[in-house]
Structure formats: structure tokens, C-alpha cells
Image 1: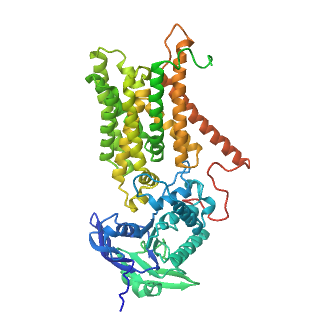
Image 2 (image 1 turned 90 degrees about the horizontal axis):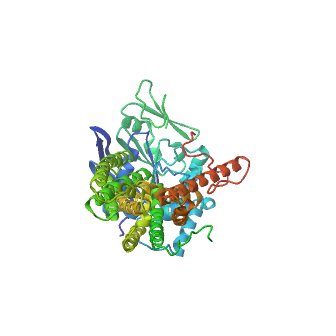
Image 3 (image 1 turned 180 degrees about the vertical axis):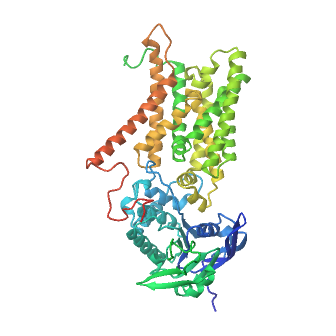
Length: 273
Length: 311
């Protein structure tokens, strides 16, 4: 009888505090090969901190992260990452093609030209993310959606098993959001790459999300959308009653009047996720 | 030919030495300068010229070669700046300012002592504004070796340096050590400043470091091309400066010639101005329905929202 392969990502009992304030408290979840997982929570709940811990850029106070069954030292090339903010100056001549190519070998010291196969791989990757038409353009002169495509190609070219994206849909227009989500879904399916995408709004991801990790007040609930986005689960997570409404294929998380709703994703007056 | 080259220009030993050292310094400054501009470290580059002044004036006081002082001072200052603050732009900025202030104070002391105690006249002028025609030809091999070593270091760290210059976060996520790359680049920058200091003086070496690089970055489509163009601009500028300074000896027989550093800085400034003007012209052309600016993408029906736009 063959053993089942380990999950691509295992986050186990992660806890982090800053200056006495708990950011993450016993956060645990798993992601398996090819799964599309949304890391959902409002701004400031610790999504970026969690991604930085997974990347090995920050140490948790408690808990452990394993990628393909290995702890920090073996993580390296298994992870691709698209950060929340990359400020690209349009006055600096960095071509989209060059940025994608750096995804192959930026960590390598020393001399050596890229091989023909490597150059073709860069072209193919730009083609796969529908970015070949601006391959020679300055990255800083591209629109937000176009820059996201280039950054996704940069992250994917080293063939990672897990792609982490930190708020890639923020500041994009609705059409671009749809296109980027569709692109990521296609990439995940074609290459069997697991995706963990952080966002403060879940509705755009509902059609493609296999799993959700819902973070609030330092705690997290994970599972399929139907398992997690339920009144009982979220009320327990928030510590007060919330209702979950499903309307026209969208989900609304609504707090009871007078409840503290500041940490309900993407919602000032009365809620919504 | 006589119109451009006064008698004895090509056969002059000082001119030959100046041409070699000027070209070598220009190449190193151009390559390092491109990354300095991309990394937004022009202020650090300028601060290093002041630290190089401290080293140069101190070396003069001790009877050592100014080149030793320029490079030694730059390495110590650059290393200190990188080690004090590298994690955040603000701390890096503060570290640069602290080192700059301390170095300038020491320079004031050393230059005062040079002027009052040294038997050699013109120390201050030589250190601050250079004296490329008085460089001993025996310095050439040292300059060439140092330049080759600096270019080798930049070549070895080229890819990690490139990505960390674009985005420190992307580089960190790939396991690149920002501290090692930053320190090695700062050392390369220090040597580059030292080399250009002996060519046009420590105080003006920023011009050779930033000017050709910034001009090239405005005119090209890729970093590699920018480095080649910056080298061509740097060498041309330096050689033209040497030519004009040599010729200026003949412009008014009753006075001495003008300094090389003035001509080099003036040409660098004019080149950068020209690159800005051409950009303005292109922008005007776009408003009138002309072609897109260099590197721009034709308007697309997809993803029209720029970064930062509200949804």
C-alpha cells in the first residue's frame, strides 16, 4: 500500500505577538497539490505576517511550517511569491522579460549567459500569462493588471510547488480582478501548483477557491468555503454572532447591530466579506 | 585637426596617462553608477565622495598616495553606512547622513592641516577638484587592477544585485542575502568613487558616477544597454574634458588652462539636460497624437487601471 504524498504546505499551531499584542494565535491549516486556497481577512489581521512566516522571512513565536514535508532549510525553490507592493519606477529601464528571467536565476552568483532553452522558457512563461505583447516594455510603465501578470510569471518560472500571493487583487479594476483570478486558476490546474492567495474580499475567488483560510482576531478557520463560511463557524471565530447571507452567488457576512465589526473583511458600516 | 587638437596633444605623456585613467574611472563609474541610480543610492554615492575627501586629505597629510586615501576612506565609510543601517530606507538615509557629517568634519581638519603644515602647495585644490594631468604614470597599473577587481565583483553579484535593486522583498523571498549584496555593492561604489576622485577630484566625482548613468537610463530599454551607453558617455565625456582642458592652455596665452574637472562636469550636465529635453519632446509628441514614449506599451483594452487606482 503506497503512502499518500505529504501536503504541499503544513501550517501547524503558528503564534505571533508584537509588543504584547497577539497577531496570530494557534493558526493551523494544510494545502494539498494543485489546490487554490484563499487566505481571507480584513487589513491588519496578520495575513502578510503569515505569508512571511511561510516564506521563512519571519520566525513565529510558536508552531512550525513545513513545505513538502520539509522545514525552513529545504524550502527554497519550492515556493513562488508575489508580494503586496512592488514599486516599479517607469523611469528605470527594466523590461518585463528581464524581470521574468530573474525568476530563473536571480539567486545565482557568478557569470554565465542564459541558455537558449532558458530564454525560450521565459518567452513561454510570458505567453502563458498573456504578457508576451509587453515583454520589452518597461515594467514600471505597465498597468496594475499587466504588472501582476509579469510578477506571476516571475514567481512561476522556477516551477514552484506552492505559489503565495499577497493581496494581488488590491487596486485592480473588476475586469482585471476576474482576469487575474482566471489566470491563476488556469495556472494552478495546468501546472498542479498549489496557490495561497491573500485577499480582504472573497467573492471574486468563490468560483475557483478549493479551500479557504478565514483569519480574524488572530484566529483562523480553514476548510472548504461551505464548511467555513457559515454563521456558526464565523460567529465562534469573531466571538459574537454574525450572519452569513448568500445572494446571487455572492457571500455577505453581516454582524448584529452594535457588534464590533472593524475586522470583518472589507466592510465599514455593517459588514460583508 | 589643428582646430580641435593643439600641438603636442597626442604625444604628451600627462595626456596619455590622463586618458587611460580617465577612461578606466569612467567605465567603473558608469557600471556602478547605473546600479546606484536604480537602487536610489545617489545620496550615498555623494556621501562617499565626502568620505573619500577625508581619506584623500588624510593620506596627503601622512605623505601617502591620494588614491590610497580616496579608496581607503571610501571603503571604511561605505562599510560603516551599510552596517549601520540597511534594513529600511529611513535608517539607511540616517546612517548616510551621520557618516557624511563626521567625514566632512574630519576633512575640514585634514585640509586645514594640509594647507598650513604641508610643504606642497595646492593640496586642497588637488583633493577636492582633481589634477589628472599631474598623476604619476606608475599609478596606471594600480588603477587598472582595482578597476578590474571592482568590475569582477559587480559581475559576480550581477543577478542578485539586479533583483534586490528592483525589489528587496522579491530578492529576500528567493533567499538572497540583502546584507551581503548591499555590502559588496557598497565596496564597489567606494572604489569607484576613489577612482573618479583622482580623475576629477573627490567633490566632483558624483558627477561622473551619476551623470552618465542617469542619462543612459533615460535613453535605453534595458539595464545592460544602459550600462554600455553609460560607459560610452563616460569615456567620451572624460576624453572631451581632457581635450578642452589641454586646448584651453592656448586660448589665452596670458593665463593658465582651465581645469579638466570643470569641463567634465559641464559636459555631463549638458548631456543629462539633453536627455531630459528629448523626453519632454516625446511627451509633447504623445499629446499631439505622436508615438508612445520609449518603453511604453500601446494602449490595451485590458488592465487599463494603473497601479494604485481606486476600484
